[in-house]
Image (tube, rainbow, N blue to C red; front, side, top):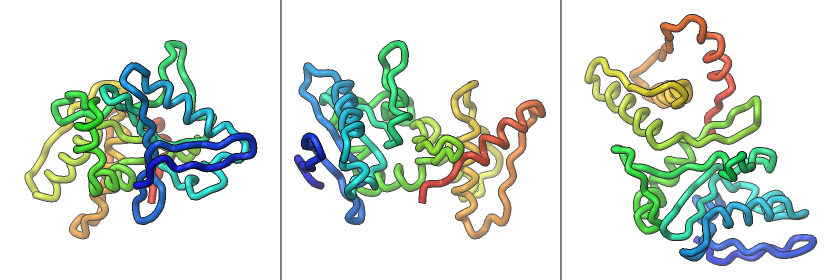
Length: 221
């Protein structure tokens, strides 16, 4: 962990609150604000840094950055690093896409201390980056799986590895079922006892769309 890292740019300098290193590489940046300031300010700061000529995200080891976390101690959000065109605010001034971590009962974990205990443990953080981030090749965009998708994938993999028979995961429309099935399939392929993984759908009209989406997903090595 590195606190208050400072990098000079062509016109200014950047100061990064907390940088987390995994295997010696800076993969996670945490920007903190005081309680009365919205984490949105931290996100704006990150965008400003990324727009600055000669910024560290391009010209230094910070180019390995995978994940940003912003917090004012009571509100904690996280999002994947991407090219600047994928950082934006919508009409309601909400930054897209951002994530709030949650437990298996979908109870939000927004307090920074609680978030750190469950999300920033060494093994959990490495797992989030290595197993649950996906590259959308057509857009050259990093996606993070939402907590409920991760829990669904873990349940599928555990059920099959334990040979507990059939099961199902119930997700609503627009909840990311295609990504969930893709990630479950890729993880199941790591089991040497599984020789083939098949995906099938009952909605024939959606098959072409889902196949296109699946071919766009790529595991982050």
